[in-house]
Amino acid sequence: MIITKLKAEGFRNLKNIDLSFSPGLNILYGDNGEGKTNLLELIWIMTGVKSFRGAKEREMYSFGGDRFEAEVEFEDKLRSQVLTASAFLKRPPDIKINGVPVRRFSKLFDSLRAVIFTPDDLKLASGEPSCRRAFTDLSIAQIRPAYGAVLARYNRILSQRNAALKDSRPVDTEMWDIQLSKIGSHLSLYRDVYIKMLQKAAGRIYSEISSDRETLEIRYRSNVYKDESNFTADYYLSRLASHASDDRRAGTTLVGIHRDDLLFTLDGKPVREYASQGQQRSVSLAVKLAAAKILTVEHEDPPIVLLDDVLSELDGKRRKYISENLSGFQTIITSCEEITAKGQKFHVKDGEAHPLR
Image (cartoon, rainbow, N blue to C red; front, side):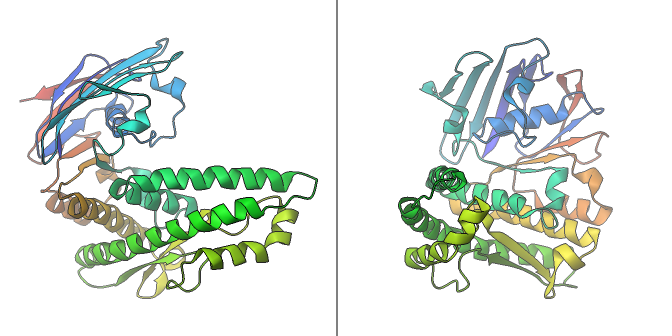
């Protein structure tokens, strides 16, 4: 999968954007604050995923503006496609896939596929469990789009249960418990299967990065199940029942997939507690590259790889490894300095991007 053209106007500081990308390496370079990350953010939003910056809608428009335009032409393994969007601050957007209207940006999901790597992702192995859950859920949804809808339903039911638990009056949570158990057990199985795939792919990549000095293992740390062969709704329901009194006192649901985590270990030692910063970054790098490779295998079509100023955070050895292992992907990189690697280069300044010949 490759993006061939990108047009944009009015997204943050972007203006007069009309770019033709190379199928291989593309480098966006320029000073901080000129618009490099804005370009990657726009591409990411056009994949149907929320901003990786956690931006509010108002922040996506130019200063004083109330609309932005975007058009992405891309090719997958079957055909050429076009995504267009006209977003408005005070009314619903006008979004189309190959001329067919859709209601929301989220409906673009699974049309254009990408994997993004930002400086925050370097903390994937050492950060909070919520970051690892978000990574896992998005990675699974990119393979099985229905997973995202089922997870959203779980979260809605969980919110209803938590609201009831906060009520001062006694409440019977059985209706929510049954639904959470059915959905949660289903999603737990999906997570377990994916993490086993990730373990295999990321373990191999980490061995290459570390020259086989250490062994990376990744395990699914379920908050509900202790035995990975027993992902049943009945067991999930029993766990909720056993914590019913604690849940009422806490005013929230203390057991469930919303408290799952991943455990990364190097030679059996937890990365979060014992690994150096360099090792943690290598683990994060291996995990993100593994996600891209899994996506390639599952769809028989490589995703686009977006790297937002990540190379400057890595040492020479890790930068070299990335360069050598992204040859099969269209890659779009941002950098504050002009990179000497061969590829299509664009200079970004004051919201405009111009190709260098």
